[in-house]
Each structure stands twice: as C-alpha cells, then as structure tokens.
Image (cartoon, rainbow, N blue to C red; front, top):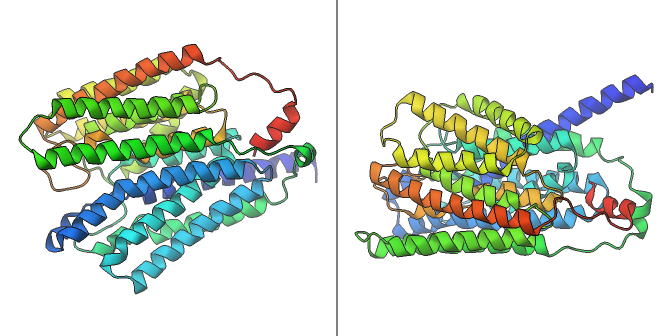
Length: 443
C-alpha cells in the first residue's frame, strides 16, 4: 500500500473512531443522567416514587466511580483493542438490559435496571476514555459527546419518552441509538485490533494507580450524600430558609472537589473544579424545554468552545464563563422568552466546550472523571421548588437562591484553582524511562 493510500485509510479510520467516541460518550451520559419527567408516578405507590427518584442521582454516582475504575484498569494495558472491546461489551450489555426490561420486567424492577444501566454506562465511558484520550481527534469527539448531551439536559422530548409509561425509563438512551453505538464500536474494535503493542511494555511493571479511584469515590459519594441530606432538611422544614445548611452543603461540595483535585496527578484536578462549578451553574440556569433539533446546534457550539479552549487555554476565562452563568441565573426571569433560553443554552454549550479544552488532562482517567462528573447531582437540585417535574424548571425565588448558591461554588472553585496551580508544577517531570512510562499511558 502506498504512503498516500495508507494516510487516507488512517484518516478515515481516525474519523470513524472520533464519531464512535462521540456517540459512545453521549450514550453513556444519557444512561447515567436519566432525564425523565416523573409525573406519571403520581398514580403509583410512594415507595416506588421515592425509589425511582432516588435511583437517578445514586445511579449517576455509581456510574462515575465505575467509569474511573475501568479507565484506570484499562489504561494499564497498552493494546488499544482491550479498551475498545470492553466498551463494545458494555454497550451490547446495555442493549440487552433494555430489551429484557421491556419484555420480562415489572415496574417494580425498574430501579434495579436503572442501576445496572448506570454501571454499564460507567464501563462504556471509562473504557472509551482510556481508548481515545491520548489521541487528539477521538478525544475531542469523546469530550463533545459527553459535554454536549450534558448541555442539552432535557432529553425527554428528543428521546420520545412518555409521561404515562413507566417503561419510558428503558428508552434512555433509546435502543436505536444504542444499536448505532454498538455497530460503530464493532468497527472501531476491529480497526484497532492490529495496533502493535510497545515492545518495552512487556518488561514494564504495571502499577495500578489508586488515587484517581479514590478521587472519584470522594467526589461522587460526598456530593451525593450532601445533596440528599440538604433535600431532607427542606422536606422536614420546608418553610425555613436553611441558610446554614446551604452553606454547609457548599463547603462540603468544595471540600470534596478539592480532595479529588489534589488526588489527581499534576494539574488534572482543574477539570474537577470546572465540572463541579459548571454543573451547579447549569442547574441554576434551569432545564427549560428546547426543541429536539437544537441538539445539533448545541453540539456545534460545544465543539467550537472546545477548539477555542485547546488553542487558547485559560482557567481564568473558563471560571469567568461559569461565573457569568451563575450571575445570569440570579437575575433571569422565571418566565423566559425563547431567545433568552436559546442564548443561555448557547453560552452553556460554549462554556462546557471551552472548559473541556482548557482543562485537557495528561492522564486518561482524570479526563474520564471530569466528563463523568458532569452527570453527578448538585446541591442546586435539592433546593425547594414548586414544580413536580424533574429536573425542575424554576420560579423567581428558586432562580435567585440557586444562582447565589452556584456562584458560591464557582468562587470556591476559583480559589481552589489558584491554589492548585501554585502548588503543582506546570507539567509533570519527565520519567527516567520515558518509553516504558508512555507504554502504560498511551492507549
């Protein structure tokens, strides 16, 4: 094969891997986030209502931990096929879970199937991250898929879910989307099966880094616990302001983010701070309904933000964009016009993409944690609201309180970023044996 033909085939294969990474990350994110309107549960038992609602943030927390564990395990191998094969197995298993759930389960088992879906989504996200985060094109696709579908938020209309059908939970993500992801993953797995293994890797002692796993556990479990705790405070005393409790929840969130950031190598923890802040600001802005076609525009804006972030990375710009969103949430009206919703969505998309580009990780599991953290709950979702829908679409009082709370998290994260950049070197020191070290991380 001539050099020109080889380059052309390589470019086509790289493009396929990029599309696969984008769609796979989107499928995993949708499965962990489960953005369903639970109004149908009004006619069911309180236990089932509480169980299914609680499984949403808990499933996301489990998925985040699983994603980082899988990313760490898979990154210890130097053959790309291992990562792609694990991702393919997870996507195929998700498809089976949805198929079986539609045909043999009862509504009482939906919570269990949601947990299983979240675990498999974590495996898919972690394996994909380990496979592509050392390659610029596919890594960009992974970031766009994970962050872009987080930006869209309200997927109920896009995924054609129905309020009156409890089995609509099994349609997130829809089976047609899962089917496309499985087909693409088969192609990418076959394409990467013949990638050579580094000769020196056979003599490399593979060490399992525990710190990224600890970082994911601290971040996910603390944020989940403090969110549920704050929600219980409002349930027990709905007419009280709970300013002290909110302050404690903000402090706990920042402590968890700081602990996770410090456990990651180098400055990779910047992505954790940005993810926690972005989730809070986006939740404060609200999940106003958007037409299904707008997902394409939001993905383009996310990609544009990613490109700018890669070319002109700046933590100051990134945190300023997120702070602007929090301030906007404080002043915006509860009943927004269409152009206000469109503008806020565009800014969230640009901010998410820019943060992904500016906080580009050196270690694949760090990037997996930052993307997966976008699907964790935030204490904003625990604040009181008049609506019975999930996620809430806000009133004026809720917006002001949510905006102030989000801004407090953003300010704390900004301080954490300053400290992180002062105590960590700009780049990690070069190892004594660069080839062997690279064979472990460069998948």
